[in-house]
Length: 374
Image (tube, rainbow, N blue to C red):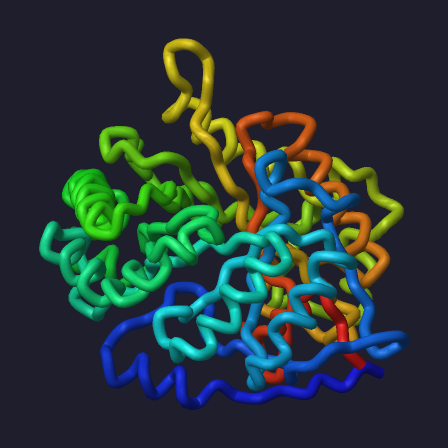
Protein backbone atom coordinates (compact mmCIF):
# COMPACT_ATOMS: atom_id res chain seq x y z
CA UNK A 1 0.00 0.00 0.00
CA UNK A 2 1.34 3.39 -0.98
CA UNK A 3 2.27 5.71 1.85
CA UNK A 4 1.62 9.36 1.18
CA UNK A 5 4.24 11.60 2.76
CA UNK A 6 2.99 15.15 3.07
CA UNK A 7 4.10 18.57 4.17
CA UNK A 8 1.29 20.99 5.06
CA UNK A 9 1.82 24.44 3.55
CA UNK A 10 1.15 26.42 6.75
CA UNK A 11 3.12 29.47 5.66
CA UNK A 12 1.11 29.86 2.48
CA UNK A 13 -2.16 29.55 4.37
CA UNK A 14 -1.12 32.22 6.88
CA UNK A 15 -0.15 34.59 4.10
CA UNK A 16 -3.49 34.12 2.36
CA UNK A 17 -5.43 34.64 5.57
CA UNK A 18 -3.50 37.77 6.40
CA UNK A 19 -4.12 39.25 2.93
CA UNK A 20 -7.79 38.16 2.82
CA UNK A 21 -7.05 36.66 -0.59
CA UNK A 22 -8.26 33.22 -1.65
CA UNK A 23 -6.84 30.94 -4.28
CA UNK A 24 -9.80 29.52 -6.13
CA UNK A 25 -10.05 25.76 -6.39
CA UNK A 26 -6.85 24.58 -4.72
CA UNK A 27 -7.48 24.33 -0.97
CA UNK A 28 -6.26 21.45 1.22
CA UNK A 29 -3.38 20.51 -1.04
CA UNK A 30 -1.14 17.72 0.20
CA UNK A 31 2.39 18.28 -1.06
CA UNK A 32 4.72 15.27 -1.37
CA UNK A 33 8.34 15.94 -0.39
CA UNK A 34 10.72 17.30 -2.99
CA UNK A 35 13.42 15.18 -4.49
CA UNK A 36 14.63 13.35 -7.56
CA UNK A 37 12.87 9.97 -7.52
CA UNK A 38 14.29 7.11 -9.54
CA UNK A 39 13.67 3.44 -10.13
CA UNK A 40 10.81 1.71 -8.33
CA UNK A 41 10.11 4.67 -6.05
CA UNK A 42 8.12 6.57 -8.68
CA UNK A 43 5.53 5.66 -11.28
CA UNK A 44 4.63 8.17 -13.96
CA UNK A 45 1.25 8.33 -15.66
CA UNK A 46 0.54 10.78 -18.49
CA UNK A 47 -2.13 11.72 -21.01
CA UNK A 48 0.59 12.73 -23.47
CA UNK A 49 1.80 9.91 -25.75
CA UNK A 50 4.99 11.68 -26.82
CA UNK A 51 7.11 14.78 -26.36
CA UNK A 52 5.62 17.65 -28.34
CA UNK A 53 6.75 21.22 -28.85
CA UNK A 54 4.54 23.63 -26.90
CA UNK A 55 3.79 25.47 -30.15
CA UNK A 56 2.13 22.28 -31.39
CA UNK A 57 0.30 21.37 -28.17
CA UNK A 58 0.64 22.61 -24.59
CA UNK A 59 1.30 19.41 -22.65
CA UNK A 60 0.80 20.98 -19.25
CA UNK A 61 0.04 20.10 -15.65
CA UNK A 62 -0.25 21.78 -12.26
CA UNK A 63 3.08 21.55 -10.47
CA UNK A 64 3.34 21.75 -6.68
CA UNK A 65 6.64 23.34 -5.72
CA UNK A 66 8.85 21.14 -3.48
CA UNK A 67 9.91 22.22 -0.01
CA UNK A 68 13.52 22.46 -1.23
CA UNK A 69 13.81 24.59 -4.35
CA UNK A 70 17.06 22.81 -5.19
CA UNK A 71 14.87 19.89 -6.30
CA UNK A 72 12.93 21.90 -8.90
CA UNK A 73 15.24 21.22 -11.84
CA UNK A 74 15.45 17.46 -11.30
CA UNK A 75 11.69 17.17 -10.76
CA UNK A 76 10.86 19.14 -13.90
CA UNK A 77 13.44 17.21 -15.92
CA UNK A 78 11.67 13.98 -14.95
CA UNK A 79 8.30 15.57 -15.71
CA UNK A 80 9.48 16.50 -19.18
CA UNK A 81 11.23 13.26 -20.07
CA UNK A 82 8.75 10.80 -18.55
CA UNK A 83 5.39 12.61 -18.40
CA UNK A 84 6.16 14.55 -21.61
CA UNK A 85 5.31 17.92 -20.05
CA UNK A 86 6.37 21.04 -21.89
CA UNK A 87 4.33 23.47 -19.78
CA UNK A 88 3.34 23.80 -16.13
CA UNK A 89 1.19 26.03 -13.96
CA UNK A 90 1.76 26.79 -10.28
CA UNK A 91 -0.87 27.86 -7.76
CA UNK A 92 0.15 30.64 -5.39
CA UNK A 93 3.26 31.67 -7.32
CA UNK A 94 2.69 35.25 -6.16
CA UNK A 95 3.33 34.15 -2.57
CA UNK A 96 6.67 32.46 -3.16
CA UNK A 97 10.01 34.12 -2.55
CA UNK A 98 12.05 35.49 -5.42
CA UNK A 99 14.73 32.89 -4.75
CA UNK A 100 12.20 30.10 -5.38
CA UNK A 101 10.85 31.85 -8.46
CA UNK A 102 14.42 32.34 -9.69
CA UNK A 103 15.10 28.61 -9.34
CA UNK A 104 11.85 27.78 -11.11
CA UNK A 105 12.41 30.09 -14.08
CA UNK A 106 16.03 29.02 -14.39
CA UNK A 107 14.88 25.40 -14.63
CA UNK A 108 12.20 26.29 -17.19
CA UNK A 109 14.79 28.09 -19.29
CA UNK A 110 17.30 25.25 -19.11
CA UNK A 111 14.66 22.63 -19.96
CA UNK A 112 12.91 24.71 -22.66
CA UNK A 113 9.59 24.61 -20.83
CA UNK A 114 6.91 27.23 -20.26
CA UNK A 115 4.59 28.27 -17.43
CA UNK A 116 1.02 29.58 -17.36
CA UNK A 117 1.01 32.32 -14.71
CA UNK A 118 -2.23 32.38 -12.73
CA UNK A 119 -3.93 35.68 -11.84
CA UNK A 120 -6.77 34.45 -9.67
CA UNK A 121 -6.78 35.82 -6.10
CA UNK A 122 -9.78 37.85 -4.91
CA UNK A 123 -11.13 39.14 -1.61
CA UNK A 124 -14.37 38.41 0.26
CA UNK A 125 -16.13 41.46 -1.21
CA UNK A 126 -15.43 40.51 -4.82
CA UNK A 127 -18.45 41.13 -7.07
CA UNK A 128 -17.03 41.45 -10.63
CA UNK A 129 -16.88 45.24 -10.23
CA UNK A 130 -14.44 47.51 -12.05
CA UNK A 131 -12.80 48.31 -8.73
CA UNK A 132 -12.33 44.56 -8.16
CA UNK A 133 -10.32 44.37 -11.37
CA UNK A 134 -8.05 47.12 -10.06
CA UNK A 135 -7.65 45.35 -6.70
CA UNK A 136 -6.75 42.07 -8.39
CA UNK A 137 -4.20 43.79 -10.60
CA UNK A 138 -2.68 45.64 -7.64
CA UNK A 139 -2.29 42.40 -5.67
CA UNK A 140 -0.41 40.80 -8.58
CA UNK A 141 1.73 43.77 -9.67
CA UNK A 142 4.95 42.29 -8.30
CA UNK A 143 4.37 38.97 -10.05
CA UNK A 144 3.44 40.67 -13.32
CA UNK A 145 6.61 42.75 -13.18
CA UNK A 146 8.73 39.71 -12.31
CA UNK A 147 7.36 37.51 -15.10
CA UNK A 148 7.31 40.33 -17.67
CA UNK A 149 11.05 40.94 -17.32
CA UNK A 150 12.96 40.36 -20.60
CA UNK A 151 14.91 37.44 -19.15
CA UNK A 152 11.72 35.61 -18.09
CA UNK A 153 8.84 36.57 -20.41
CA UNK A 154 9.77 33.94 -22.99
CA UNK A 155 9.08 31.23 -20.41
CA UNK A 156 5.49 32.46 -19.92
CA UNK A 157 2.95 30.68 -22.13
CA UNK A 158 0.11 32.99 -21.05
CA UNK A 159 -1.41 34.78 -18.09
CA UNK A 160 -4.42 32.78 -16.84
CA UNK A 161 -7.03 35.34 -15.73
CA UNK A 162 -9.59 33.78 -13.42
CA UNK A 163 -13.32 34.49 -13.60
CA UNK A 164 -14.50 33.04 -10.25
CA UNK A 165 -18.07 32.32 -11.33
CA UNK A 166 -18.33 29.16 -9.18
CA UNK A 167 -17.74 30.92 -5.85
CA UNK A 168 -21.02 31.18 -3.93
CA UNK A 169 -20.03 34.39 -2.16
CA UNK A 170 -19.12 36.02 -5.47
CA UNK A 171 -22.44 34.95 -6.93
CA UNK A 172 -24.29 36.52 -4.00
CA UNK A 173 -22.19 39.68 -4.05
CA UNK A 174 -22.84 40.17 -7.76
CA UNK A 175 -26.63 39.74 -7.61
CA UNK A 176 -27.12 35.98 -7.55
CA UNK A 177 -26.30 33.02 -9.78
CA UNK A 178 -27.58 33.51 -13.35
CA UNK A 179 -29.08 36.89 -12.50
CA UNK A 180 -28.90 39.67 -15.09
CA UNK A 181 -26.65 41.71 -12.80
CA UNK A 182 -24.24 38.78 -12.31
CA UNK A 183 -24.09 38.16 -16.06
CA UNK A 184 -23.56 41.80 -17.05
CA UNK A 185 -20.91 42.35 -14.37
CA UNK A 186 -18.78 39.50 -15.71
CA UNK A 187 -18.46 41.11 -19.13
CA UNK A 188 -17.52 44.53 -17.74
CA UNK A 189 -15.03 42.96 -15.33
CA UNK A 190 -13.38 40.87 -18.05
CA UNK A 191 -13.02 43.93 -20.27
CA UNK A 192 -11.44 45.95 -17.45
CA UNK A 193 -9.10 43.21 -16.26
CA UNK A 194 -7.76 42.57 -19.77
CA UNK A 195 -7.30 46.33 -20.32
CA UNK A 196 -5.46 46.78 -17.02
CA UNK A 197 -3.24 43.74 -17.63
CA UNK A 198 -2.22 45.00 -21.07
CA UNK A 199 -1.44 48.46 -19.68
CA UNK A 200 0.63 46.94 -16.88
CA UNK A 201 2.65 44.69 -19.21
CA UNK A 202 3.27 47.63 -21.54
CA UNK A 203 5.29 49.29 -18.77
CA UNK A 204 7.85 46.51 -19.16
CA UNK A 205 7.62 46.12 -22.93
CA UNK A 206 6.01 42.70 -22.60
CA UNK A 207 3.34 41.22 -24.86
CA UNK A 208 2.34 38.00 -23.11
CA UNK A 209 -0.96 36.35 -24.20
CA UNK A 210 -3.95 36.83 -21.89
CA UNK A 211 -6.34 33.91 -21.44
CA UNK A 212 -9.67 34.25 -19.62
CA UNK A 213 -11.28 31.34 -17.77
CA UNK A 214 -14.62 30.05 -19.06
CA UNK A 215 -16.67 27.75 -16.84
CA UNK A 216 -20.26 26.71 -17.49
CA UNK A 217 -20.79 25.03 -14.13
CA UNK A 218 -20.21 21.51 -12.86
CA UNK A 219 -23.68 20.59 -14.14
CA UNK A 220 -23.46 22.92 -17.18
CA UNK A 221 -26.12 25.06 -15.51
CA UNK A 222 -24.33 28.44 -15.31
CA UNK A 223 -25.61 31.07 -17.73
CA UNK A 224 -22.20 32.42 -18.68
CA UNK A 225 -22.00 35.28 -21.19
CA UNK A 226 -19.46 35.54 -23.96
CA UNK A 227 -16.32 37.48 -23.01
CA UNK A 228 -15.40 38.23 -26.63
CA UNK A 229 -15.63 41.99 -26.12
CA UNK A 230 -12.71 41.83 -23.65
CA UNK A 231 -10.36 40.98 -26.53
CA UNK A 232 -8.47 38.20 -24.75
CA UNK A 233 -5.97 36.18 -26.77
CA UNK A 234 -7.49 32.85 -25.71
CA UNK A 235 -9.39 31.01 -23.00
CA UNK A 236 -9.07 28.13 -20.59
CA UNK A 237 -11.87 25.89 -19.33
CA UNK A 238 -12.51 23.43 -16.50
CA UNK A 239 -14.29 20.42 -17.98
CA UNK A 240 -14.33 17.24 -15.87
CA UNK A 241 -15.83 13.89 -16.73
CA UNK A 242 -18.33 12.30 -14.33
CA UNK A 243 -19.21 8.60 -14.03
CA UNK A 244 -21.67 7.82 -16.81
CA UNK A 245 -23.83 5.50 -14.70
CA UNK A 246 -24.08 7.99 -11.88
CA UNK A 247 -22.54 8.13 -8.45
CA UNK A 248 -24.28 8.96 -5.18
CA UNK A 249 -22.07 9.35 -2.13
CA UNK A 250 -25.00 8.83 0.25
CA UNK A 251 -25.95 5.51 -1.37
CA UNK A 252 -22.42 4.12 -1.43
CA UNK A 253 -21.92 0.43 -0.73
CA UNK A 254 -18.92 -1.76 -1.39
CA UNK A 255 -20.65 -3.19 -4.45
CA UNK A 256 -20.79 0.28 -6.00
CA UNK A 257 -17.04 0.15 -6.57
CA UNK A 258 -17.59 -2.40 -9.32
CA UNK A 259 -19.98 0.00 -11.08
CA UNK A 260 -17.41 2.78 -11.49
CA UNK A 261 -15.87 3.43 -14.91
CA UNK A 262 -13.19 0.87 -15.68
CA UNK A 263 -10.92 -0.17 -18.51
CA UNK A 264 -13.48 -2.56 -20.01
CA UNK A 265 -15.69 0.38 -20.99
CA UNK A 266 -15.47 2.07 -24.36
CA UNK A 267 -13.43 5.28 -24.33
CA UNK A 268 -16.62 7.22 -25.07
CA UNK A 269 -18.30 5.90 -21.93
CA UNK A 270 -15.18 5.82 -19.76
CA UNK A 271 -14.79 9.61 -19.93
CA UNK A 272 -18.52 10.35 -20.42
CA UNK A 273 -17.66 12.13 -23.66
CA UNK A 274 -21.24 13.24 -24.33
CA UNK A 275 -21.17 15.26 -21.12
CA UNK A 276 -17.79 16.81 -21.96
CA UNK A 277 -19.23 17.86 -25.32
CA UNK A 278 -21.92 20.03 -23.71
CA UNK A 279 -19.49 22.71 -22.53
CA UNK A 280 -17.49 22.46 -25.75
CA UNK A 281 -20.57 23.04 -27.90
CA UNK A 282 -21.55 26.05 -25.81
CA UNK A 283 -18.05 27.49 -26.19
CA UNK A 284 -18.15 27.03 -29.98
CA UNK A 285 -21.56 28.73 -30.18
CA UNK A 286 -20.29 31.74 -28.21
CA UNK A 287 -16.83 32.17 -29.72
CA UNK A 288 -16.89 30.96 -33.33
CA UNK A 289 -15.82 33.72 -35.70
CA UNK A 290 -17.54 34.57 -38.99
CA UNK A 291 -14.82 32.73 -40.91
CA UNK A 292 -15.43 29.58 -38.85
CA UNK A 293 -12.25 29.91 -36.80
CA UNK A 294 -12.35 29.56 -33.02
CA UNK A 295 -9.96 31.18 -30.50
CA UNK A 296 -7.40 28.92 -28.78
CA UNK A 297 -8.64 27.06 -25.71
CA UNK A 298 -6.68 25.25 -22.99
CA UNK A 299 -8.51 22.49 -21.09
CA UNK A 300 -8.12 21.98 -17.33
CA UNK A 301 -9.22 18.58 -16.04
CA UNK A 302 -8.08 15.64 -13.92
CA UNK A 303 -8.66 11.98 -13.10
CA UNK A 304 -8.59 10.26 -9.69
CA UNK A 305 -9.38 6.74 -8.53
CA UNK A 306 -11.48 4.99 -5.92
CA UNK A 307 -8.74 2.37 -5.66
CA UNK A 308 -6.28 4.86 -4.17
CA UNK A 309 -8.61 5.41 -1.18
CA UNK A 310 -9.06 1.67 -0.62
CA UNK A 311 -12.43 1.81 -2.37
CA UNK A 312 -13.88 4.26 0.17
CA UNK A 313 -16.66 6.58 -1.01
CA UNK A 314 -15.80 10.18 -1.77
CA UNK A 315 -17.94 13.27 -2.20
CA UNK A 316 -15.76 14.26 -5.17
CA UNK A 317 -17.07 12.40 -8.19
CA UNK A 318 -15.61 14.74 -10.83
CA UNK A 319 -12.94 12.81 -12.71
CA UNK A 320 -13.60 9.63 -10.71
CA UNK A 321 -12.76 6.22 -12.18
CA UNK A 322 -12.44 2.78 -10.63
CA UNK A 323 -8.72 2.00 -10.51
CA UNK A 324 -5.24 2.74 -11.83
CA UNK A 325 -5.76 0.76 -15.03
CA UNK A 326 -8.92 2.76 -15.74
CA UNK A 327 -7.04 5.98 -15.01
CA UNK A 328 -4.39 5.20 -17.63
CA UNK A 329 -7.13 4.52 -20.16
CA UNK A 330 -9.05 7.67 -19.21
CA UNK A 331 -5.95 9.85 -19.56
CA UNK A 332 -5.36 8.57 -23.09
CA UNK A 333 -9.05 8.68 -23.99
CA UNK A 334 -9.38 12.32 -22.92
CA UNK A 335 -6.31 13.32 -24.93
CA UNK A 336 -7.71 11.55 -28.01
CA UNK A 337 -11.18 13.08 -27.50
CA UNK A 338 -9.97 16.67 -27.64
CA UNK A 339 -7.26 16.14 -30.27
CA UNK A 340 -9.62 14.39 -32.67
CA UNK A 341 -12.72 16.56 -32.26
CA UNK A 342 -11.55 20.09 -31.44
CA UNK A 343 -8.64 21.47 -33.42
CA UNK A 344 -8.86 24.81 -31.59
CA UNK A 345 -7.86 23.14 -28.28
CA UNK A 346 -4.31 24.38 -27.85
CA UNK A 347 -3.42 22.09 -24.96
CA UNK A 348 -4.07 20.95 -21.40
CA UNK A 349 -3.20 22.03 -17.91
CA UNK A 350 -3.81 18.69 -16.22
CA UNK A 351 -4.73 18.86 -12.50
CA UNK A 352 -1.97 18.02 -11.58
CA UNK A 353 1.48 16.44 -12.01
CA UNK A 354 2.40 15.82 -8.35
CA UNK A 355 -0.89 16.89 -6.77
CA UNK A 356 -2.69 15.04 -4.00
CA UNK A 357 -5.63 16.92 -2.51
CA UNK A 358 -8.00 16.33 0.42
CA UNK A 359 -11.60 16.78 -0.67
CA UNK A 360 -15.05 15.75 0.43
CA UNK A 361 -15.35 12.95 2.95
CA UNK A 362 -13.00 12.64 5.90
CA UNK A 363 -9.54 11.20 5.19
CA UNK A 364 -10.19 11.07 1.44
CA UNK A 365 -7.12 12.14 -0.55
CA UNK A 366 -7.69 12.49 -4.27
CA UNK A 367 -4.86 11.06 -6.38
CA UNK A 368 -5.09 13.59 -9.17
CA UNK A 369 -1.34 13.12 -9.68
CA UNK A 370 0.55 11.82 -12.67
CA UNK A 371 3.58 11.12 -10.46
CA UNK A 372 2.97 8.45 -7.84
CA UNK A 373 5.58 8.05 -5.11
CA UNK A 374 5.75 5.11 -2.69
